[in-house]
Length: 218
Image 1 (cartoon, rainbow, N blue to C red):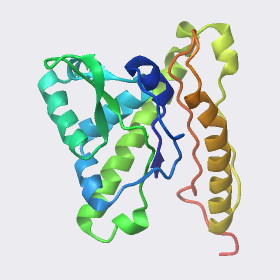
Image 2 (image 1 turned 180 degrees about the horizontal axis):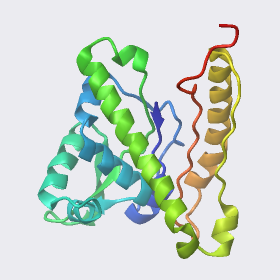
Image 3 (image 1 turned 45 degrees about the vertical axis):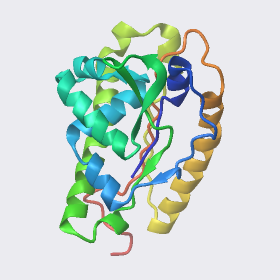
Image 4 (image 1 turned 90 degrees about the horizontal axis):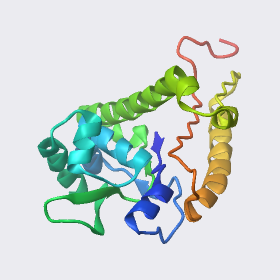
């Protein structure tokens, strides 16, 4: 599973910060201790919200997520202890602190985290919540796009599915090649000054064996 900080360019513009290094998918490899900290549905939603929309306060997050500012403030502090989020320096006040997601991608290897029941449970929860948030974003777009976006934006979007027959080795090779292309293409958008007319955009890529399928030759 890989999750990238998809709004770092927006965060830099709003928070007056810049990332010293371009974001790569291998920036941070999550171990079991860090995974357990992240393994809470609201914490995953907080990370996702900061990724999509840039810096927010605890009260701002509470309004977006339907939670109290006390709850979001508590979870932000827990995430900050493990550098999942960082306070935006020079913005806000002691009573109204602004938070951004740490400018790194997150990756988890289920073969390393699945040795214990606690590891499997934490991995499944975090992966499920990230996926649910991605699905919700896509479903919300499909339901509201025609009434929300201009024709120019609607012509710019792509929703694509390809069905193939592949070995595990071929799938791993394809995934690596696509990640390389995405990294190379996306970094240019993160490093530039955000232009007028820009809005948060989420790029999703899925590649996985289909449940219920049968291996060739079996």
